[in-house]
Length: 191
Image (cartoon, rainbow, N blue to C red):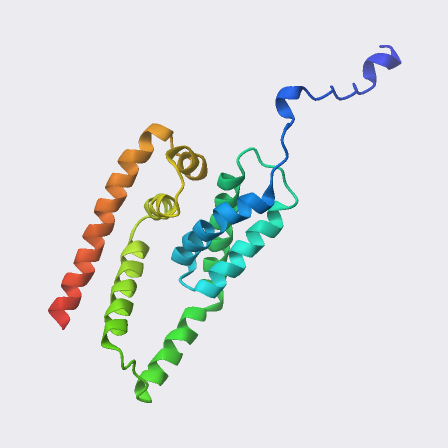
């Protein structure tokens, strides 16, 4: 064997089909996507401030990459960050601390004087619980749709085929309504 045949070959030059001809205008992507991203994250973490922090983190991470579809990439990273956040909350049992604080505040007589706000909060809590009942796939597809992503972007984000998105959304909506009605029915029976 000759020495030339054992030497590693030089990498081939990139082709134009792989090079981005127009750089990503992250300022424009930020303006167009940030509100949808925060809304998506808020429905994942149920805390506006935390959702805004996570959205900022997503854009910080975006500065190091050059994705083909920036919007889909942002929502993918946001979904992963929200999932990591949820796992950390479970590990640290933050939810128990919050529940304990709410119970102590209720015992101390701190109540919301605005009945409309209380009703709205109860409705929001029921929707949260109904979303939590859904499978991760149904919840993700619904939240991505609510965040304004189109079928192509939802398919890319969720790993589903584009043709399955409409059916999946329809079934997920139906399951969400059923879960919500079950929760509300149980609440009405208790109340």
